[in-house]
Length: 192
Image (cartoon, rainbow, N blue to C red):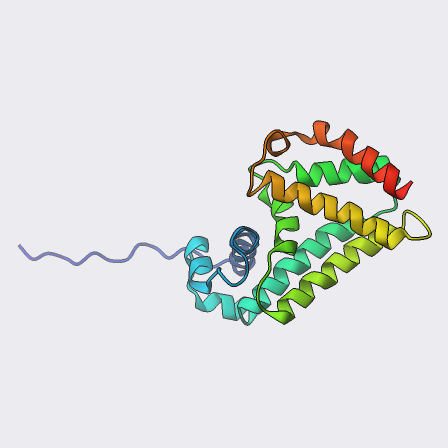
């Protein structure tokens, strides 16, 4: 009996937009967890289940992919940046910081912004997004508002670090409701 070699199964239809989004989601998580320098394009491609060449096709390079991740964070912030008082800002921050395990985008956003990269261009991109966040928050106050906004942002970043990857209890398991009131107090005291 002659054996017939296995034929490859039907090809999965290409969906460039979905592949691009999968790469962004994987990269955002990896860059947030491991940092820019420790994340390889091979790791990103493998986790996304795609050929490494697609990173260059869609993003030009690892740096281009990182820029796209930062742009998505900035876009998320712009969507939440409508004028608001201290209570609403606190509620938004609590929602972002308490992001559920299935919604790692929220949790990873702040971590992505604080991981050092060892690459000055990447660090400047991070600083630019952090400056933009501070300026948006500062629009809700007056006088030394930018400094005060940066202190609120520093507290949010610190909360992110304590929640993940350090997992310091009880803040690591605190839900949105538990975080909202102390954040409102902090923001009201600083931004008034």
